Length: 395
Image 1 (spheres, helix red, strand yellow):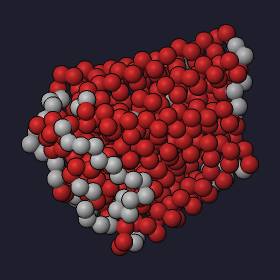
Image 2 (image 1 turned 90 degrees about the vertical axis):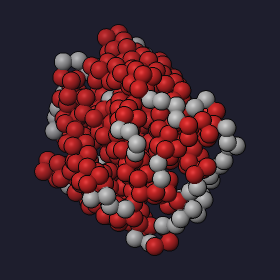
Image 3 (image 1 turned 90 degrees about the horizontal axis):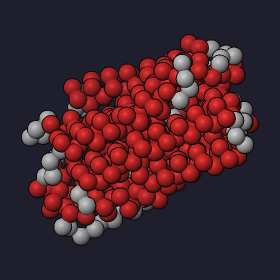
């Protein structure tokens, strides 16, 4: 890329938005247990807000073409900070005043639904911005920077749970500041490039989910997101009940586990994507069976060593599969389809975020091993796709 500044600004914006959005994950299970909400209601927080993410993604994909990539990013970052601060304040009210659980659930769900409508803004506009300014293998590295940030944010966010030892809602208060910092960075440091202005004047182009060039990549993105969220949500319930921890200890323990996953994920990407510059095909060839091994390890999560091994493998899998699938999808379509494919990738993440917690919590209620069987099934299928030559095509 011609300048390090725009990619760095985009990296920070995506990292801070995802860190804020995922700071809620280790908090929800102990919040539900303390206020009388059920495990299924906890899953609905993710599922219904993610459906909003899924529905809104095509809208923000079009808006990134007409309003501009930068403006859409600013809308997303500002709304993220405000809405997650609101969730924290209402959660605090629920802990201190103990209202009717259904009333508390309804208010918190409304906030989550609104936040879901805005959450896809930053990843869509960021990937389209990068696609406007890069080509070929350079795009694999540049796009990996975005999804490294999102993957890292998905881990750092829960990692903020270590600050919950003094007060359960602290992670949300800390997390809500981050996208506002990202807002300032984008506003002051991200130019509107000529390539972006050209794309704004171009007619809207659509890419279908079942487009033969990209559907396998989109399946992998959705599967990864479903697996990560399903593991995040159910791990909190299991750790608290099996190891007899308090609510704050649970959030702190889950936060530390996902902090470990984040370190492994970023290290994997720095070595194999940035230094070795592995192709998207090779990243998926290695990453999908790694996530299958992760699911097998977590089936033995009654032993803490297996839990740590599973979360390390999860970090490696994220570090390979996320940049591999997203760059593979971007490279499979034409230049004038980049805004559309960015929207489809974001919608696939939204679909995974909707399915993962809902399926995970319901399977957990049946048997605490079933969520990990679900992850194993997804990545058994994904491994077959990643090892198939027909999965990799050129536009």
